[in-house]
Image 1 (cartoon, helix red, strand yellow):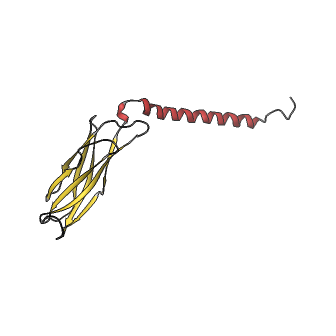
Image 2 (cartoon, one colour):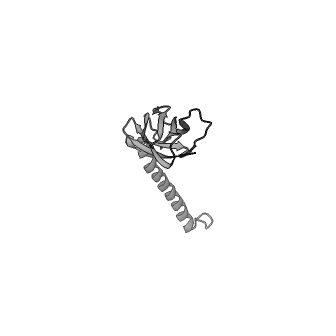
Image 3 (cartoon, one colour):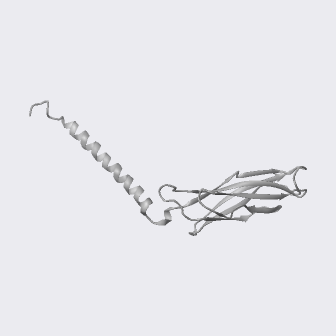
Amino acid sequence: MPPKEQRQWYENALVLTVAGSIIVVIGQLAGTIIPIMYGPEDISDFSITANPVDIYVKHSEQTESNLLSYANVEIKVDDFHPYLRPYRYYIYLKILNYPKGTELTTLGLQKVGVGGYSILDIAIDKDITFFDEPMEIQGIGEDGKTHNITIYLSARW
């Protein structure tokens, strides 16, 4: 062969290295994504968020009732793997505990689908003052998975 048509030794090594790297990357992606997409159902899961997490209620003379002050919290349910393995069950929301002086707590929707939300209405006795009292909300999926979120209430004059 004439010298111009021969490849240098390092060009062959470079081609082999690039091809091998591409094969390794494809193998890693297939080894990670395929088990998530086609593996056991346990991989799908949900999460619960609250907005706001810290609720501050200031009692005032202008409230609708002489006994209660009100606050609202949006409880949202999201999916951990929405594109690879979506969570296909409904989630039941319930209030586990709330501070003394909280007269009335209601969830707008107790059964929520992934991507949905519920409004938590809280009524607090105007004679009660407390700071950063925890209130726990639990979400239970139809498949038995549970997740909790804690919000903190403060109320004062």
